Picture 1 (cartoon, rainbow, N blue to C red):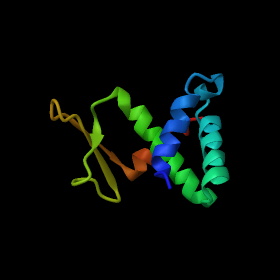
Picture 2: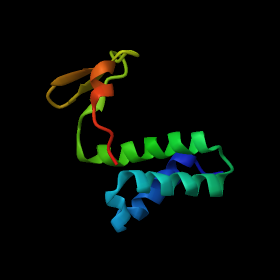
Picture 3: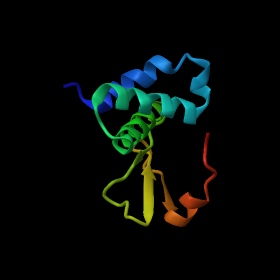
Picture 4: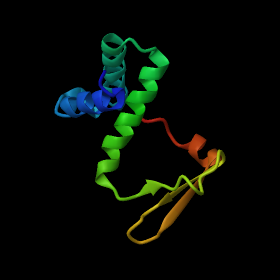
Length: 101
């Protein structure tokens, strides 16, 4: 069985040229449906996989990454490994972000 994360990344990569790709929620819903229909996994698992795959694709345009050593359940540290510059977001700040569609 193929890795479901890889399946999701490939599916999303193929959808990028479609006009619906500009609507993040529609793109995610397509991917979730594809995973549920083809992989016999739950809706919740498919949603997690689709979100992780989309995050990977979106991360292709930046060198920044989450510092998993310093990140806690209450603070997310993001670091540019080239320069060492960092940002920290508290859970409160993250919850205040607008929801993208």
